[in-house]
Amino acid sequence: MDIINTQVRHNKYGIGAVIEQADNIITVKFPTESETKRFLYPSIFENYLTFCSEELQTRQMEEISRQKAEYEVAVTQQKAAAEEQRKKELKPAPKRRKKMISSETKA
Image (cartoon, rainbow, N blue to C red; front, side, top):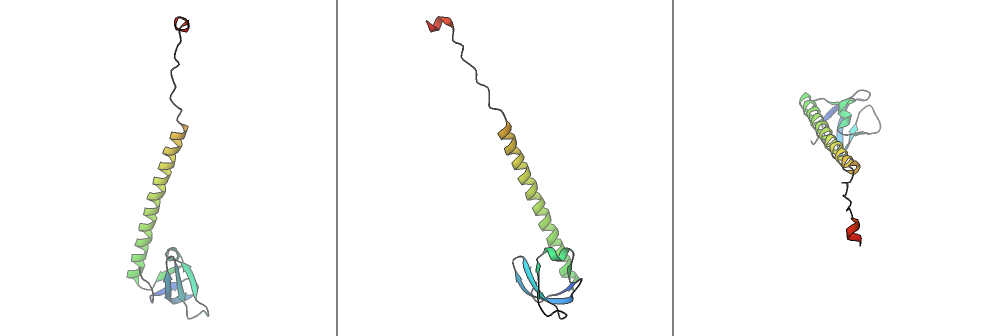
């Protein structure tokens, strides 16, 4: 979601504007601060930052929920695959039957 030029509210710094967005980092300019602030995106919106627009905030929280659900599914699949691999490694090799050599065939 492109959030450049949107207004956000921070618990400590107040209202600011997103001036840069790159992958998982956003840069926000707050009028009360001399320097810009950089935050991890989108996780910052879980606790410390909110959009001034309710619509954007709702969309962001839905996106975070979707990403968390996808992550949980991936983790569950990885755990299941690792458990299957572990079971395969622990599974004993099949026992081989020993050939009985009778004394008649030895001679």
